[in-house]
Structures are given as structure tokens and as C-alpha cells.
Image 1 (tube, rainbow, N blue to C red):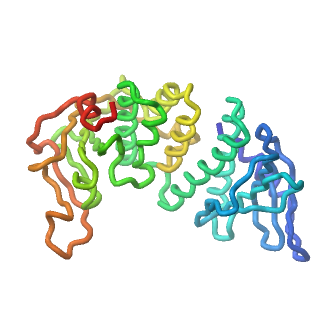
Image 2: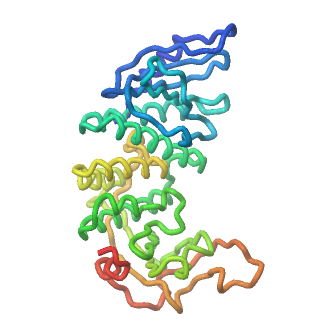
Image 3: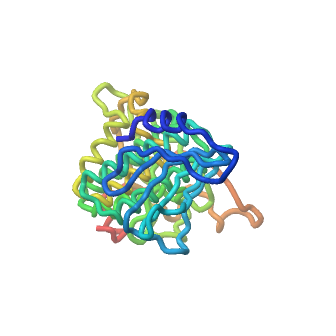
Length: 336
């Protein structure tokens, strides 16, 4: 659970930057297990930051730290010779609201892993992974998922749950979910991939294809499209309930929990917005279709020379092909 924003805002507001010298003013906050935490303000640029001190873990000198349009992770001078000291720092142009939300979420993630007995090394990876997820979210420049994106994310998560139910390794499943990282397809599994398309439409199945690569099975093979028709119903589940069910299925696999949390952040989904997702969905129909000759698509190999980019719509209800099962698709992908 994210830390309360007041924890940071009150500390930052009580610190003032000095024009006289370069340096940090820091107020200690509750630690995250062995990791000391502080709210800091740097002079002379008046930058707010979260300071994290790791007692004994190390980073290689060449490891690149995450940075985005509104923040940077920087090494700072340690208090002791064996400390790694990092500052998650807001840049001048960065949104204070977004930076505070990131600070609360990142520290909340560390707190949750402390409760699992995570080592100091794992806590460092949790920190860098979660900040990297925020980097991806900020790069997209999008707010929480809107109505259409909510349907799409629900469909992806329902498939993720089905993959877990099929007996795949939880860590392998969440690692395969690359859609939040702008993967060409939503899932990369085994030798191929799965693209998920979801709709509430009862007449036709409109599907937006985002690139010439998305339905190109010459890149990854075999390639499947999972068409998931949903309906709003009082007996259905809200998006946060689907998220909660997956977290429950992953709870005994800390690395899977970490990756799943990072992927959700990259999509723009945050637990603090859970009450705003009021629609409840049930699955009306699922079709699992292999992309092969005759499937309606545009690829680099089929469009005229000179076309380098395209986005187009197809109607999956008009695809003439046999539907298979998730289990059969996984076997063909050599994932099961």
C-alpha cells in the first residue's frame, strides 16, 4: 500500500533551500526495513527528493539509473564508507503531484517487500524496477486508463489469469506480459506471442491494430489473437477485483508480485484510483485464433514498398478460421 502523501509533503514544506551553498537538507522518515528513508531538499536548485540509504548493497559503476521527464535517480554522497545513497529527485519541470504519487507508491512497494523478509539486494531491485515502471508511465504521458483502455486492460488481465489457471509458472506469465512495456503483442510466450483484443460490442468485433508488426507472424511464430467479448453486468467483476484475484494467485511468488506491480504502474493503473472503476464485466465469448494465411492483416511484406507505418481496424467477427483453446495455443507456443 502506498505511503500517505502527507508524510512527504509536510517534510518538504518544512525544508528551505539555501542560495549560499550546494548540499542537502534531510528530514528522516520511517525506514523501509534496513533502508533508511528521508525527505530531502537540495540547494541551490530547490529540488525535492526522497533519499534512500542502503547499508551494504552495491551498484556496479556502469549501471544506468532510471530517469524520466519529471524525475531522476541520482547517486549522492553516502554518510558512511559502505553505504549506497540514492536520491529520487524531482526535476524543475516535473509535476509535483505526479512526483509525490511516485514517491508514495515506490516507498509503499518497499514497505510491502520488507514484510515478506526481502533482502537488501532485493529491496534495491524493487526500488529500481518500480521507478522504471513510473518512467514508462510518464513517457506515455497518459493518465489512468480511460473507458476504452479499461476494457483492454481488463481483457489482458483476464487472459493473464487464464494462463495462471493453465498451470504456467507465475513469474513466467507476468514476465510474458509485455503489453505495458509497449511490446509488439501483449504476451510473448514460448516461441510466439498472443495479442488480446476486447470489446463490449454486440454487433461485430472491432479491433484496432496498432502497427504493421502486430499481426506479422514472421517475427514471432506462432501468433495468436484472443478475441474477448465482454458485457457489463451486476454479476461481473470490476477491474480492481480482477487485479486483486491475480495478486492473490501470485502471493507465494515474490518476484512475480514485484513484476506484476511494476507492469500495472506502467499501464497507469493505481490502487488509489480503484473506486473510480465502477463497471462490472463478465465474459460472453472467447475466441483463440491463429494468425496465418488468409487472416485479414497488413504487414511489411504485404503493403506496397514505401509504406513504413500503418494503423488500421479489422472486424474479428469476419475472420474465417477455426477457434482453438487456450491450452492448445499454449502447447503450440511450446509454453506448456
